Length: 280
Ligand code: NAD
Image (cartoon, rainbow, N blue to C red):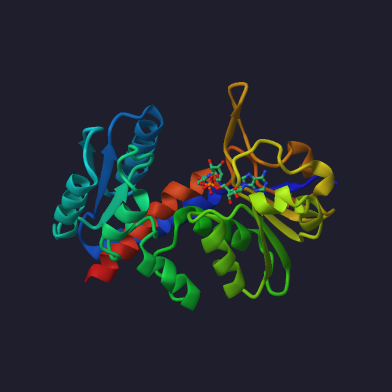
């Protein structure tokens, strides 16, 4: 069997059309404030791609760069300025941050109604109650892909590999909201030699680890739906966390690149529109 490819781009294009209509209805150009601290080529490239997506949607992308020696306090003061600026609709702090700045502390300083990465405790907390308007974009991207695949999550055995704050943990909550039976695996599962056993039970498998070919083809249940969030650079090529040959066993699989990736920036922009609506 050869799996059907579940690509992110057509879904992203549909959502972009919806965002454009929402922006029209807002009646003004929303402003996204993006803050980078210090020099980082990877982050600069990400900023460029965000700016391009934003501007194509009619969003003003305001880019701020602080020196690499900025303190937690000075970044905090800068965020406060953006929080209090009525012209700014959403704030994103680019990663990585220099060692002297703790992201967890910083993510709490962004006003929850401007937190378009959905990482403020108030926004994460709302996911538990199923009424969050702003979701972490990568977790939300996986949910959009699953929705587009037409799979009914109710009662399905879903295995999530990776329990990070930006992907695995919020995703587990979103899946529970759909009445999936969710198992979350992580490094402890691997160390206990139980990863293969859990993966083999998955009707739907979502992997967000950052280790090329961690998931072996033979572990994938025949007919499973596989969402590969991983991004790894191997010999100059981008690959996921799942062996590509798993496509011979899965019924549906996301390509890497081209699966989750094209959706995340789009959903960041959707969060901006939601944030502006919440501020009204
Ligand atoms: P992270 O480093 O914060 O978390 C990694 C997770 O993997 C942890 O839960 C850890 O316990 C688990 N893990 C590590 N080694 C393991 C092993 N051997 N077996 C089982 N679990 C193991 O990572 P993250 O920020 O969630 O990112 C995960 C991957 O997703 C990365 O490749 C990242 O580049 C990618 N990512 C992609 C997008 C996108 O837009 N496509 C967005 C965000 C992250």
